[in-house]
Image 1 (spheres, rainbow, N blue to C red):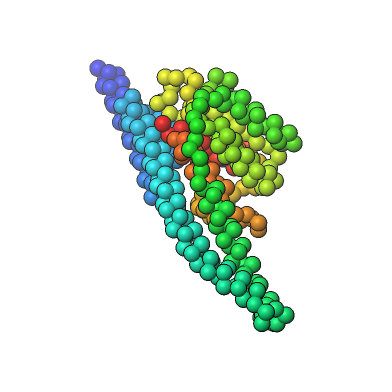
Image 2: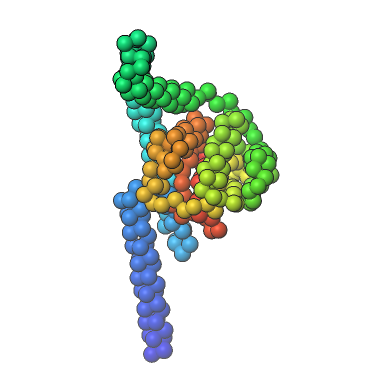
Length: 294
């Protein structure tokens, strides 16, 4: 009888201890999610190991919800910057056009030629022309053609990109049966921009890996889900990482700050998203992710 009581007590204590440990685990997960949301990091994906089946389903739903919020935030940011850029380009063009005309008229005037004023007016004219040319080129670049979507073999596409850069080491982990519905020319423009940025950051190795990150796609083994594009170039500082998708933001002396914001816009037109992974995958310093938004 005493032995039975001891066994029952031991079982109860063990159950209580396991229950307490489990609750601590759930509390820690809740804290991690709260911190991620507070810092506007919606890329969190907490593990489901050790959870009961109901808790596991809830955690998976929360993980997917975080991804959807991240996509929505990115989409809204792109739309906001597009509207702002349209206004700015319009206002800049309106402001520079009369400056160009007036300065050109002064430069053509016989009373200005050969005087000390000519050099200053020429500088004003050249600066306004340069600004107008830059704005006009950006406007033309952002007036993108409508994508022509086709099912394309992702592995073959990645291999075609790697062939353009034979001096780089490529690690391509993309199954041959994966297809993505996209505009090949526009997608190539995005890839080339990412590789170009990597080269400028002294990268020697590019990694391309397709992963299945959501249960939504597990029913179709050939469906595109998420592509990770990594490189071993310079680490992107946190303060820069927060700004890299903002139009005109650049850390390069001769950079325009257009490439990544334009790449995100190109992909969004094809129901794809582009983001910078907070923690690069093992063996690399930078990881970008292209994910299906369908």
